[in-house]
Length: 116
Image (tube, rainbow, N blue to C red):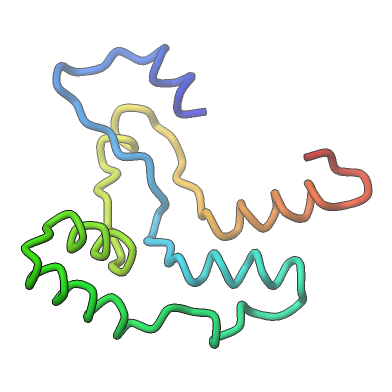
């Protein structure tokens, strides 16, 4: 939907548009949703990477002066917020909820009548 509107709508010069949800989606929530769909229960806590791992890795990156390691660990371990005002203002697109939409996709794609 957004790609079609981007091709059709006049864009102001140097406009950055972030395509994101109404609210942040946490990776562990998405993993739990997918695992629950297939196994009927949340993703096992024992298989989740502890936060201490990311903190230790970041410190290790500082010691090695490996900025790439620190950046990658930050990207994986932090929640990120994206300003979607340009998306809403320029394209009149209603923002979606990834978790709800993904659940609908799973239900349809893996039902007897649905096709992936």
